[in-house]
Amino acid sequence: MEVLQNLDPLLRTFWYIAFGASIVFVIQTLLTFIGADSSDGIGADFNGDFGDADAPFQLFSLRNLIHFLLGFGWTGVSLYSSISQHWLLISAAVLVGALFILMFFFIIKNLEKLAENNSFKINDTLNQTAEVYLSIPEHKSGKGKVMISVKGSFHELEAITEHDRIPTGAVVKVVRIENNTILVVETL
Image (cartoon, rainbow, N blue to C red; front, side, top):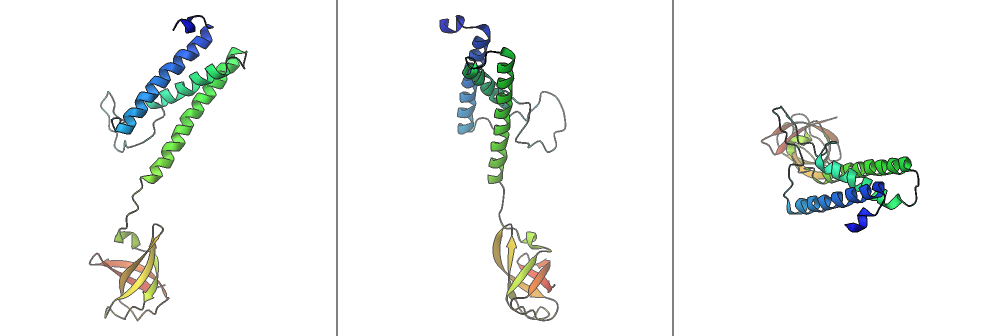
């Protein structure tokens, strides 16, 4: 630490911030990988109704402060010899610190997309259109099959109609679900 004592006070401050933020960042990263940081600051020291407080990104959190200080400190250290005006150097460091927070926000938003539940639920077929795959007999006298797209994937499901026979290739609309397995459809 004697090396840091001989530096200009601004550069020394940048080094302290960079080292401190880096150490905390490494600890946070290790805790993330072992699963010990599951809350990410959602809890509070006061009573309040958080209702839907499952927000993955909060602007004012310890994690974002560390990301800001990481970008701020290392930018100050890196650009100290290149930028002679202190106000310009500090402005550049603040800008990079803010970019670190935005970059983290972008990464979290993209990771959230991986956590979406795209499992098939037959109730998602209601009011959707489908194409008749095997003709559907009239007035519930038998079952046919339809091909329907739900959340980007196609499903072949049994279908009946309460009206006239529907031929193969016709476009139909799902109006009801019977017995949680059979679609009741009508022609468009």
